[in-house]
Every structure is written in structure tokens, then in C-alpha cells.
Image 1 (cartoon, helix red, strand yellow):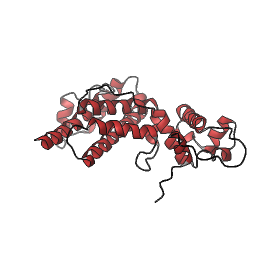
Image 2: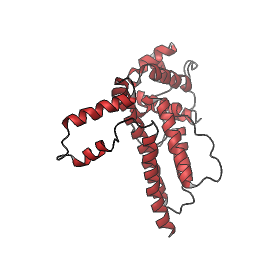
Image 3: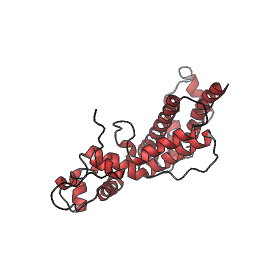
Image 4: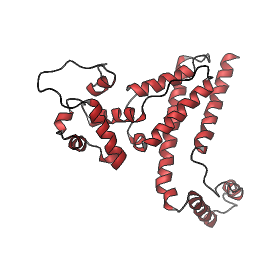
Length: 245
């Protein structure tokens, strides 16, 4: 299998291919990626196409292919650039704080560009910022005594949880919460709907949740992320303790 990087991703790493004969390049990978991000931020991911990005840059679609080989490569680069680089880690943080920092940074970055979670994942991380995030998550587990494969699985689980959470919350916000005057009003409408159809004899567990007022108001935006993250880290802690005896 070839390990050669596509030209756009190679450029993102600072590995420039040798110049071929022809006109002097007028564009850069960075400019093309920035135009793609601007389009996605303003109009949504579905508006991003090689034609649209080329038009924004005053170029032709074929001109873009000298820098990126496909729309899929462009989307990879857009996500990596939109998420940006993690800040330098503060020294002497424990593995739990380190993983939480990785997760919260990733969630904040994805929320700033909600379209980033709609870009299909076509393989393991290979772009610079994605690889740097993986390195930070693995490094947080360095002193745990866990096997390297376990560390990699934890990083994968963490990134998958954050991505799924951000995607779910964005859908809930757009299609449910925004339909009401306030989030609490949306939840009260949901409770009223459930109470109109739920039979306590058939759904006793759900009835207990309704009676406890769990759905009476909307949780703060970060509450569900924090709760799920704590449970994941609790599970990792059990694994670490088992490893260290």
C-alpha cells in the first residue's frame, strides 16, 4: 500500500512536492482551505464544492486540483484547519485532567464550526492538528501503565464520544430547541406530549422520570457532555487501577 501523502495534506505538514513544469502557482493550499471554511461557516457544508471554492478565489475548478486532488481531501484539510492546534499542555497534570482537557478542547472547536462533524471520517487521523490531538491524548496516559493498544482505544473512544455529542446537540438545538421561545419551553412542550400518551402501567420507568421532573427544564449546554465524560473517565480509572494493582 502506498504511503504517499496527497499533495494538500503534504503541504499542511510542510512537505512540499517538487514543482512541476507549467505556470507559476497563483494559489496556495492555505487560501483554498480558508475559502472552503468561509463557505461552510456562511452557508453550510452542503454549499462547499470545488466550483464554489474556485469562484470565491477567482479561479477555475481545474486550478484547484493542482493543490488538492479531490473534494474529500479539501474537506479533511478544512476540518483540520477549522479545529486548529491545541494549546501547550500545562505541566504536571494527571491523566484524568489531561484527557478531560483534550475532550473539552475538541468539543469547543467542533462547536465553533458545527459542520465539521458532518464531514465523513474516511480513515485514521493523518492531518497535522488531528495527529497532534491524538498525541496529546496518548501522552496524557503515558504514566498509567496501560498497554499502548489500550491507550489508542481510549483516545478513539474519547474522540468518538465528543464528536457524537456535538453532532447530537447541534441537531437537537436546530430542530427542537430553536422551535420554541426558550429551551425550557421546548422541554415543557415535550413533557406535555409525553404525559398525553404515556401510560404509567405500560411505561413505569419513564413515568418515574417524568414524575421526578427530570424533563421539566433544559440542562445547561455543557452538562450532558460533562456527565458522559465523567463516566468514561471513571471507566478508564478502573482500568488504570486494575493495571497498577
